[in-house]
Image (cartoon, rainbow, N blue to C red):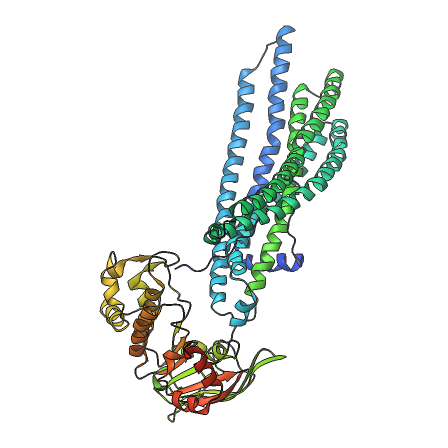
Length: 619
């Protein structure tokens, strides 16, 4: 099942200097994440121990290799001085021991990556599962103030970013710190003077990298901004390509795109160039350090202070020492990204939920809870007061009494509160005053999900998902048989057109359901509602977006749907509600007129003015 898609958050990790989004509450976000992954603490502890063990073996390797080099050098010198020469057996033993250490290190690394990948994917699974459940518990007001793309971005981008960052942070941070400590120990154990020379170049590297970071970050930020502009222009052009062609503004669009694309090119080039300087600069400084170490090491070897193999080992340690420092800088960025993603994820999970269960259930005379099966369909609005915020009341004093099976039309100008009344009836929002009763039972005394089983909705905006026509109709009653689905389709005047479609009821609707017409979509939603067999119907502008001929077919289908059911019809086309049992004319959140079609025309009030404005003929 698919739904609307939001725009993905632009940008990625980039390179050195790429701007990193920071969490507003870094400590709180990390603390929430740590609590969330607490159940995996044993696995993470094993990962840490394996990472330390793997690193320790890697750090010891160069020292052992250096001893093999020393043994080889001494054997050669011994041969020239008349000694026994090279002891190949001893060298072979050292190399076998070295190979065993590296194999053990690789095995530990493999196991640690396997465990950590499993942990991060389980965390991602739980997060997506929790977010999915949370979505169904959110109040409607949350979705009114948030764009769909924002919520989708949390499920996709933020969860993915958190999992990837967590996987790398947990292993790289431990490995990098262990490597730095181990390498420093081994370097000092060889010679303190050479170690100080190696460390002397470190501040120079940090200063130069910091300067490059500052310059490149500015260009990365510009790159991200203009990447958003370019993507936005492309999205708008593709979405409105027919308008662009119709108004012949292709040249203007191309010119604007080229201008933004040129700025993006310059920013991207500068950001990549400056961030790419870090590698050559670090290599240059490293090579200078190697020269100094080689000179000093050679001198110390001649003096007999150190052995030839120690110089080789030391140079390898210098190479190992600079890499984890760069990795820690990268890990710091990942932690910032991880905290920012965690903040959004847990911020969503902690959002206020819509109460699902009633504190006090309405009772029958025998003391048992009233269920949907006990409801006939009488509805009473009693002095209802509501506003989307306390300081903006839009429905002031709404009262109406509807009997079971009646057809109630709600009309009025845009913004009068027609659709809002329907949302209140379904408890998408709770009222600030008054009561809404179903069969004299307050709707607040029903569990929300149980209450909504009473209603069937057919809206102006049809909602169909990727799947077969049979599956889309069956959505109204998931356990319905094929025969029940087809019977509902016949009642909704769907069967005739479905028979002529490729694969009939098994034809797959595409993502936007664009392979059927708007009228056919509406008939399918009516069939779905007929299958659901609700006690109360809500029809909100169900025919406003179709032609007159299709409207007649939809009206016939809706007549079948409304038989014996209490029906609320919101309509702008007054021709569709002439036979309503009661017409409520709303204005500024209140009922200003009510009666039948003939009664309201005779009054000559608001309804008569609206009706005449739609049906007056120009002479």
